[in-house]
Figure: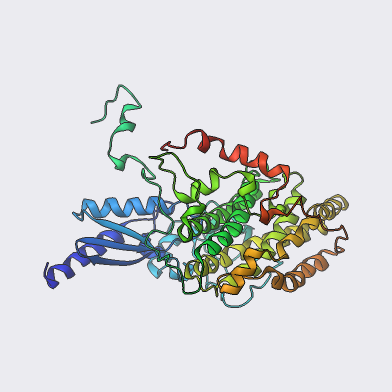
Length: 171
Length: 304
């Protein structure tokens, strides 16, 4: 394969991989979520590198299958999905487009992730976040629980419009 | 082609696209370089990873048993999420153990699709588990679970923070990820501990009683086992004795905010010739594993 054809193939493979959405938050692509780290060609094999959001994220197997299926649909027969553990996934990796998509679907995007060097500070009071209601925009919101429907979300409620909503946690 | 007269025929085809979660187990370390660093003994690394992996696995299972039984729906979800994080950590650690020393993985019948980390989780007897006894106790009062999670997550966070500098890059990566997760677990347990301690007379009494139940098993986390001594020497692990002072400061902080006295119950002694890290467990672990492992053991060549 010539270098030019290779470059085209990588572009096509990347385009296909970047269309694949998260199985639990389908308004987000894996690229916008920051899970898809790299797309490369090794000979005829497309190598996709992913970093899991949480250690126990049960969606990772589905993400891998979705990536392989999409690439096969586009004519890439050999697809290898590899896990990259370091650096660990951070909610800071969610793109601006991803954040807008979350907001548009009623999910509050994460703020800046806390620093992870050195000893972790014990937080005895509920985490203070500037969270705006994704439905009405009010800043009068209250944390219901730090744990929600998926590993990456906390539960909030809006004290203005009274609706509950999910917030993607800073990690 | 799918025969619509039988709902089951379609399941036997070889088109993997019909499966929402795929047909294959996925190697959690697929594509990760598991080569041993210079000076690291594979058997020693595997033994160490089994200890940390078993702590996470057993505690995860106990926490998951709260699903649909917790005091409220939010707590159901919280404990299930914490259990899921620990299960993920256990899976990575057991996979790391298997990659470092394949001889630790129980032999299964030819053709078994069970991946190594599942073979370790489901096909070892209690005497082969290396978790501390703290994590294996039966569930009962929610305050006991709160106290146990507080002691366990405070220890584990201190441990994982140091393991980020492990000379084993896989262990270092698992730890760096785990730190972010366990920080939420520790906050959750500490907040509940304070809430119960400063709640009603009854909730305070139960929080005290919960701490008394788990406190005697706390010291086991900080007693240096020969495997941990080797791990520290070779630079891939941490001597747990060195964590005790830092953990104590944090626990004191939680106890003082809650207005709780430090429990005075004496430590539980060893069982026979050792403790959890030597495979000496309480009866509760055997019962828990019997339930956890029964389906996998009945179908060692099963595909799901």
